[in-house]
Image 1 (tube, rainbow, N blue to C red):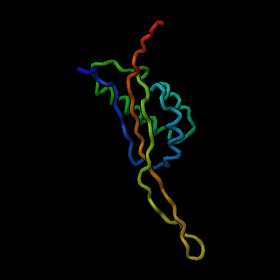
Image 2 (tube, one colour; image 1 turned 120 degrees about the horizontal axis):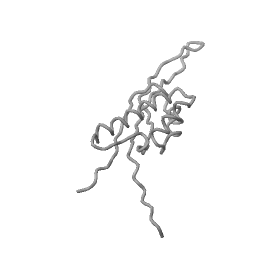
Image 3 (cartoon, rainbow, N blue to C red; image 1 turned 45 degrees about the vertical axis):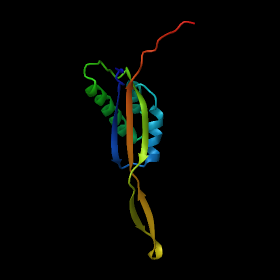
Length: 126
């Protein structure tokens, strides 16, 4: 039988922030270990850093729940995938001079995080 693949995911849907702004934060922690990513996000001066950290914590809790018999600390886990998709856009209008109206797009996004256990690297001597 195949060995289990140690990974879990978490999704935050309909976050009322523009995906372009959240992607800046997601790009900063892509591929990092979970403990380093959370430390980096705590010092990042972006409002969406709190939301991305929340999803990362949720994904790491999901992997612990999924594999209870395995000891999985944050230093053993890494962010395998993190991406931000565009959600629904609320269309509003702003009254403008001479009876016109300007459109305001209130964007939202979906954050998806997949965490996995770092595989032990075997050292091969050549």
